[in-house]
Length: 297
Image (cartoon, rainbow, N blue to C red; front, top):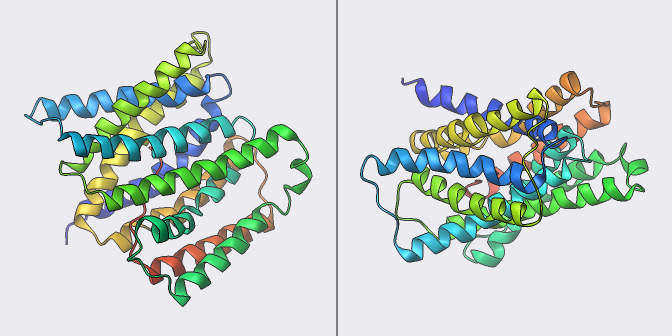
């Protein structure tokens, strides 16, 4: 029995759960477009340079267009909006909302992948997951009257929906290249777009930012993008997709725990119950449909 894929899966479960905390810390001082864009540019450059040094070629124009479309939805529509939202929304709450990614994937699949069937099991999972998502806000209702917090919550939901659309689009349009190389190209191209918009809109690097801000930025480059995504691609090639998808259940738990201990974000019994209900809903959905779930870089 080869243990390496299981170690890689364990890394995904933990690493992608920590990225919410890293974003929350970094966004206290870093402008959103540069924080989201530059880390993808750097990570993409490193991955692409490695593949180019081994003779990799740029994919065909059709594949490249599909990479850009899905990458735009995932990295710009998903990650950028999440970064902006986490200026106001606790990392744990953002992570729990993101746990609903499979729900949106099912819905988008009905539009883009009409051959996917909606079963009773899927509907049951969607209803249970929806209840879990609503319970998240039981203790947050009083904050929804604050425009900034409400806007942040809305942005997280839009980010999750955008990431789901990008995931389903990738499922529909298979790219004929190494998936890690394709991910590197996505990060490089879409990160460049985001970074250009940031500089054009007047954003500048926070050269006087604290060490925590720069460490969070570096962490997202190395662990969130390069190691995390590469581990995901490797694990998916070695283990069943249904097994790999357990990271979706574990990420929010890691994020909530880290938010509690490091940022003193509140955890109530309702938050714990919301996590459990959402996880049950996601699990039932996974049992009812063979849909690959792809993570914001």
